[in-house]
Amino acid sequence: MKSEFLERNRNINRGFRKLEIWKKSVEIYRQVHNVIQKNRDIPFKVKAQIEDSALSISSNIAEGYSRRSIKETLRFYEIALASSAENYSQIFTLFNAEQILEDDFNDYDAKLYEFENGLIKMNKSLINRINSGQEWNLDYE
Image 1 (cartoon, rainbow, N blue to C red):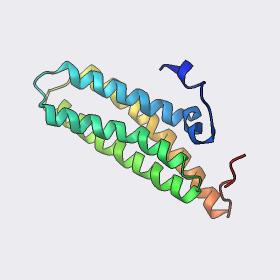
Image 2 (tube, rainbow, N blue to C red):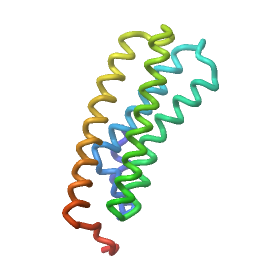
Image 3 (cartoon, one colour):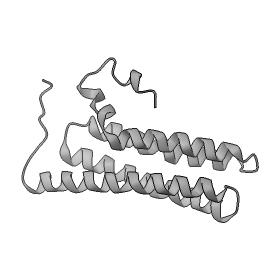
């Protein structure tokens, strides 16, 4: 990851860049892109759909973080989790059709599983905050 770029031009709206779940989701996109580009037999439309679902994961984490409301943040994190399930299904289908290598699938599966568990943990934490009556700090200090 090009982390030196994450340290510049910081503000409250870009705070998601410090989240490990966001960083892992960015790396998942890169991995997915690299794996599917190896196989020229995968149709362009399928590649585009798979890359879109992978890109949606980090995008929804960023948007949710920037919403400044726990309930809205949780909703976007839930969408990110759903996008990861969609992406897993797509990659597994390619693996099952023998369009990607087993080693590539296993590496992807392990990284996505770790990411999903981190996001699930984050979502549980947000649910606990909602249930205890906590709310986001809505000012921009």
